[in-house]
Image (cartoon, rainbow, N blue to C red; front, side, top):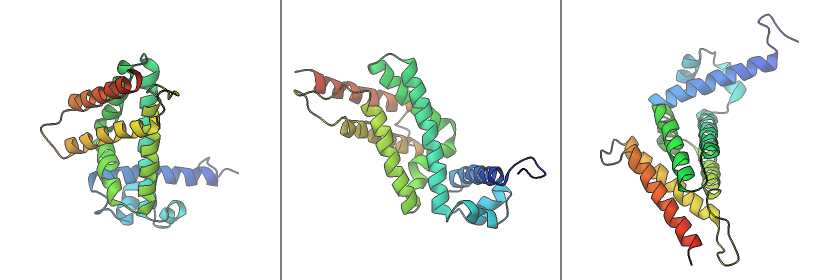
Length: 202
């Protein structure tokens, strides 16, 4: 049954959830997690206090949802970049570049993904751990498969590529003048080439 605004109760709940996630992106991405409050999120979302508990247990729970939304965007742009490029170093470079561009195009995303999620609670940290594994798997998929002669775990190398890239982006987020976007992509691509060479050349 639909009410006066043409939405069902479930649709209204979903809409309020989206409003809170958007507000969380703004509050966490500009003020930081430690300075955030449920009240600030509600004011940004234009919702009453009871609607926060309708969707989230606490700020940590909201941070996890905001973080997941950012990761969904990362996966989408990385998948599109991979599909548009030929296999090999060119594809790896395209994926690395797309991920960095996505985060840096909205400084709130970069701040939350690289810094603020670490200041949140155990729920967000678990989501971050899962996301790192997912991005690592995406990178691992660009590596040559394991063979009887070269038996290795691609996921380990994928995680290494992801970790290096994110650590360099953290340096950029800290306004390190020695780290440019191009350098981050160059380093990741060079590491990718080195890993592929080590795994394929006798």
